[in-house]
Length: 191
Length: 148
Image (cartoon, rainbow over all chains, first blue to last red; front, top):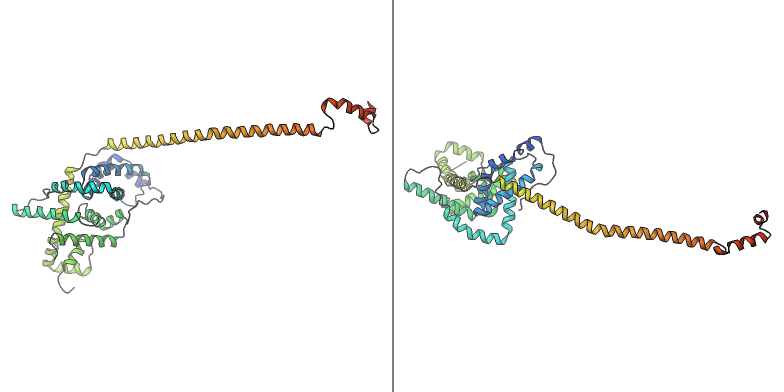
């Protein structure tokens, strides 16, 4: 299913317009989130950077159509998802993504654990588990991976994810359940 | 709820599918609560690691690049509009001229037709008009000529 931005001309509320008035601040506040999501989804630094820039460019051009029904983050995420979808349609880019995945996967060693483990063994085990989740997430379907990353990396609520991907909350939960179950089975957590 | 949480129920819980029965059971069963926490840990660690890793990778916001891209797109749109206007002018000018020529030709045709009509409506050619007047003077119905 394709995710598309709503195009109906709905009046822009003053509050919504105000949220985007300082567009520099919008970029400063949300660029890390959008880039993080695109990088985790694409596993390629350069296209993630390009799509992030394109995302803010589109947002800037469409800022007058922002209706304030969703948060700025959700709105930007919808634009990013559309760009991601267009990007993935290109067979040429798919080839390069596969080629680039290897190098980025090597870089993502799980060294960025938030807290230090009690022992080197426990730390090594946790690092390996993080890498296993990363690898398992790469094997999910596109839709499952999207909701998985939005939930566990972006820590978005189900309601927010539903608004961003344009699906019902129940459908998001179903995708997320399949993703979580598949990852748990891959990392050997679920019996 | 009869027994402890199954693996599927734990996955459901992690995916936000949370029934009242499971919630009650988790409140009462320390073993299941601990099991859920253990199951969630790889995901929580993964999220934290991905955020920390991406924070290092995130480029500095390139406002200049975005502003420049906006300007570039505006210029491109303006250029396209200018080209479209030039193309419209190139097409429209000959069409307009042709239209003007057609109007002028029609006007000339109309004038010629009127002239021809005038010529045809005369009973005698213009140089013979005085003779016609003389004939009219001699005719019985040439009252106007007689009166002169």
